[in-house]
Image (tube, rainbow, N blue to C red; front, side, top):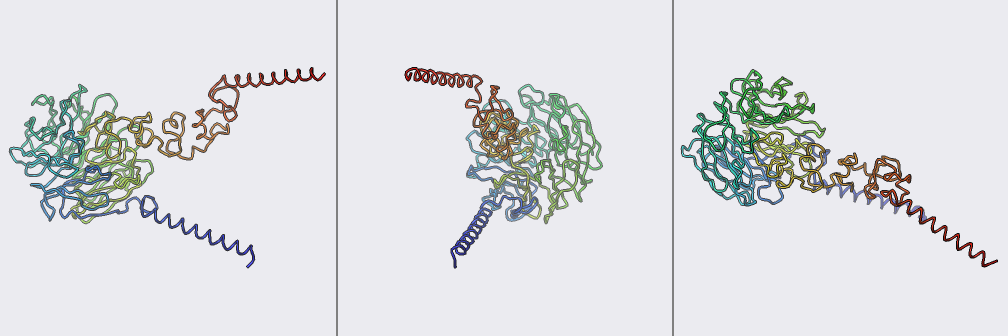
Length: 578
């Protein structure tokens, strides 16, 4: 074999070896972080775990034990081997623990630090009239409270600081026709209001009149708004509803609106401060338990209302400002669940997730209601879905339960650092002023900050000059990173200089054709849209001080001085030589 052939053979073996090595590394990486869209497609089943009991409850998610991993919490019904309990499932779909209760669960687990010990607590109520506070770190009971009537509690637990003191309050409604408010620190009863009818809906805690104090809104046979310092409602209206209200200022007039689905075949909008009717929409069927969601789902600048109906089995989309019909999608059976909004396929548009008694989870296009995807289970679905990035791959997953005793996790291509993005528990939409706490007043509730991994007590988690809310809702940047796209140019600098903080390749562009890439412009502190940042008639690439207008004159003067000295020395030398 001659030298040329030997050299070619060696190079071929090296090339083949490198390709095998790269392929092996790729395979290893795929096993470690299966995040690529070509590996798992939107809608694929990631896991399904049996909880050995049917459930009317819906899941919630948070890192309840502070181990860096997301956990999923759900309550069970009175049948099966895991009856009457709350179950914790880890992000891989394995049951971590369960806590036995006295009765079955209809509501959704609420998660918050209610006793100010920097540990998340799980709040849940059962059908025997007991409310439990369970410590998330070791799933031990902190306290429980039994209502005197021992009536069924079907509602979820509302959490908030009602009287602006150091304590968090816990509020719920019960089958004895009362609203109860407990001290979150110890579970002691603070007060209760007689409402006159039993309730399925969760109370809503909100400042309806902008006076700095929270009010509580409850809905059943009558819609009532209570001040927290009085047993008498400030207003009440005679509408029958099992729907938890959604509250938002949809017309930007500074006054909140309340949205409800009614048992009398209507959807209504009320003035939150007075209870006055603003508009109503007549339905073919009625609303039972499904709660409205308010968001700009078609990105036309106007908020829409999404809700499910009973009997007609439809998802409705209305203009939230005036109640005009936009679209509806009809399923094959009743809809009890509350819709959830998030990205499904990563196209930047909002999609609707809703489950039906016909055993299917549906994904609809928010712009027109077109069916994008559905997933069939082995049983009817009462559960609200939730959405979150449970495996921290940057993409959202869908979690929901079915009467086949399974909890399901499906993949999406939706981004995890967007709004709408994570929907970690009931009432997850940050545009709706619901009952959860917002410690830093950045319009992102604490429970959503936990899902986004932002700091609930700091408005600007990454300290990059942009508040978390602004990063998420306006710029779609990661509020936990100063440089979202990793191009060495900070998000704030890119935003200020009209670059794209989500596009890594703009670092290598030269928008002003001065010979400097945008990345070099950042490093030199120059304007990426101006070839002469300091207007000294010298191109930034050639300018030794591109941000100092006077510096060229200094340099020029120095150069002239040097030339003059050289000329003087030269003349003196010539004279001496003569």
